Image (tube, rainbow over all chains, first blue to last red; front, top):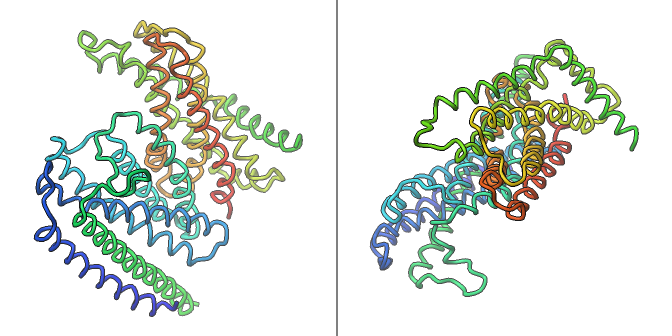
Length: 231
Length: 226
């Protein structure tokens, strides 16, 4: 797809995603039934869980494209990796802010050293390192390679982080949708809303991802032209 | 295969010889270990907190901070006068260079880990518990995992203009599991729990070190290529 095509599709997806998100907000405030034990605070779930899902998807995409970049050295793979990583940081920040807001009401504390919280926080910092490495080299090629190494090692570290933090007793609600044995435990309307929200978040992410990817392509084109003029 | 091992050995020997002549890093790490013990002594109200209860965490924190001090400078001397290019142009494959440098760092850090254990034992009158051998094994595996990750990222950070400042930001999030496993072993052994209870943690420390070594050996070439 050309850069212009990417931009158009990205804009389209972002607009559709944002409209979808507004619909999700409307549904979660006025339509869905209130959860019995947690009350209205539970409604943040429809933002928190899709944000979490998108974060992990984005970081996974970044690690995968990073590994492929080191292997194939195709500029486009690095562009995809950095675009995914930025999306991951945004949605990760959403997850890390909505989680404590809910936790204050449901658990009585903003922060607790709970496995999923810890894992996300560490992931967020690993990707902070990703951007710091990227922007602190004189030679951009080098920064791309360094950042790819950070993303790959970060992805390899996740199983270890997961095992280590699991040993602390978990306060986090257990999965309610993907339960291999019993099937979803969520009432129908809540499940519908969750899946709608998941779709909206994913579409927004894809839209932002494509816009960001196109921007990175434009930057490169600008670079090439500036060099031509200079030469 | 034996050529490969010879190449690794040559790198280790070169690094250790450099260290033997300058004694910069080992002196810095050793002094840090003792001074950290002194500072911890004054930062703990020993009337309220028994050192025995918190020593496991302090030992591992000292190992991580002290280790960064030395490992962060792995590539410093060679970067100064372009000697690193010489090392990289040598016929040794890049992963042999990485493994050599990592093992040389381990040879420096492991004695420091033992020194930390000794210093804390001496300063706080620690009871080392049911099986000091397992403590040493856990510290050894922890030190190995630590140098495997931090040598790779020392190469990364020394290639940026932020230098060593960047190193803790890159490795601390990755080191969390190692510290959790390590403190799990140390803490439990020091309160006299049976060895069987910590074997799982020791295995995870070993797995962490192995994965870190393998990842470093594969990825190092992408860090140093130019």
